[in-house]
Image (cartoon, rainbow, N blue to C red; front, side):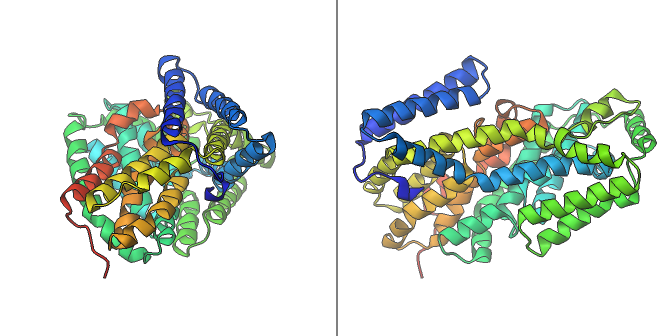
Length: 458
């Protein structure tokens, strides 16, 4: 959206004032009024439109900014549709119930939260998708947490931490590829350089989750009851693993996420149809309305009844509104003005690293979109890194440490809304326990202050 900025930018005080006003408006309604985020974000859109009129922008120009802002998220919107279909089809084919059954056995020992964090991290690296990991294994592990004395907020924090470890470190991840591509850094050089912050963050997070894990083990009778209910449902079957293998194969062969999710969803639906889990008419209707379980266990029914396009509409509408607001901020010059003035103050390695991190974090907060956080910050700072004789892999690492993993911590962001919807745990509740996401920016800022692991340009 860089091309949307006006020829004359507003003053820095005016720009910062507008940003603070919008953040205060959104925060007040979400935190104090307990409002759904759609309402304050729509109010912020109206406020920015009024500001544009005061600045003598035509409505056509403001509308162009809104439309192009929303268009930038269409790729994510299409993925959300398919995530809803994936969840419902994986429920019907028994894929998620099978994952749940395996998860129950893995979680039978101590260190439950640490195990959740580790397994979701490994899965996230393998799949390259925090959304898919959270919507599948995440749902399964929350089901385990419901059967034992484990905090749902802590469990969600472990799930989000592991999923975004994978989203950050996987060569199959779109954000990882985007960060390396934007600043023109070799993908594997980028991943290798990220280990300086990622490995310490992983180790510290694992220890914290191990300490916070429930003292008692999962009761065997609870596991037996869940296992028996799942088996009685007829959902768990050897063929239930085929959609997972299909998704993994599509991911390893670097197929687009849209294609991989679509093929896996269709495969799961066909398996459910041929196994007569549902009639064909009922099966296709679950693509929109979601799967509804009818077992003898109400807890299992609650865990398995989810998915469908309809379940994603809340998320999709919020994404469109948030990106519309972002488009208005660009077309009126608010964000470009802040970026321009920040660049003028950068001289040292310390100030450059800190500014990069806080810019990426700020765009996540103000716009709520991790892709724009990576794209805009990367485009704004690569010349600055060149002038300071710093290797661009320092920039790409900071983009991930303060861009990719921050988005799930923002309640009105794309990731935050999606995770809260899928996991059923509010962002504010799991935020204090998303240790990996909190530690990554802290470590990258610490390295920036000390100069450790900061590489000079060859």
